[in-house]
Structures are given as structure tokens and as C-alpha cells.
Length: 203
Image (tube, rainbow, N blue to C red; front, side):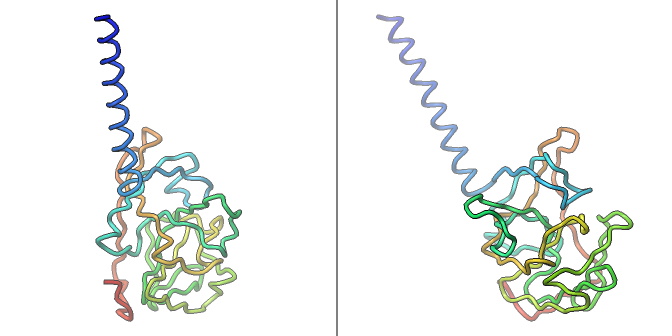
């Protein structure tokens, strides 16, 4: 009987530990961090298929998405994902509320200025598409963000389906934890010389 009591106590302790651990994981998953796996080639050479990222779901509760942030978002209806699949995309923010964005001469222009993009390899050109036609200036509304893949020739993004909304954004990709040789914080990008239009404030 003493052995049974000890075994029973041991298993109850194990179950309690597992329940607490799962509860902590669930809280973190729902409110703070969420793992995502990169699928497709739209963010190459900076992110590759099969890599695993942690998405920060907290930062945008207290601050605004910034130009240059890599974000995970729910694909808009215009992106053509199969209904009910929970389709999420990973792209880089090119334009924020109040910006004008244009595709011109194989590059992005934001607020009339050429967007410097040192994270792109040479020869990676930006083509227009159905929504962002050559030279068309797109004014982003108060809750709108223009997003683009880094691998421009192989990215289905805002050039095709238009801006996403603040509500679409799950969070900012901030930490890569697989593969092991690429573990680390994902750096934030800032663009020198690109002014903010000031047309809208998200604060």
C-alpha cells in the first residue's frame, strides 16, 4: 500500500507539472509568441522554406508596425487562399499608413523617394502587378500597410492584392530558431532618407 501511495503521488505530481507547463505554453502561444514555419520562396534569400520563426504578438499592442518590419499576417481574401486553410503570409512592410507607394523603374518609391533596400541581392528587381501598376501612386489609409516579399520575382504580395490592414497582422517575426546555424534575433530595418508623410497617425 505504501508503494501504491508513493506511485500515486508521483503520477499526480507529474500530471500537475504537465498541466501547469501546458497552461503556461497556451498563455504564451495565445498572447505573446507564436511559432511559424516559412513556406515558399517569396522571402529568399533572407528566409527559406522550412525555417522556423517566433512571431512577437505583443509589440504591436503597445506600438505600431514600422516600415521594414517582417510580419506574419492573415492573407486577405484577394490573395486567393483556399477558404478554411488558415493561410498566413510572411512579408516585409514597405509602406505604413499615410505613405504613398509606387512601383517605378524596377524599384519601390515611398513618399516620392527611392526606397533603399540593402537586404536585396543585386539583380532582384521589383515589377509592377495588377494592383500596383507601373508608376501608380498608392495612398495608404489609416489602418493600411503595403507589404512585399524580398524575392520580388516570386512573391505574391500587395503589388497584386493591395494593402493589408492592421487587423490582419498576427505579429512581427523577431526570432529564428531553426535551422541551428541561423538561430538569432531578426534585425529590424530602418530606411535612411525616407520621410513619413504625416497624413495619418496610428497613435
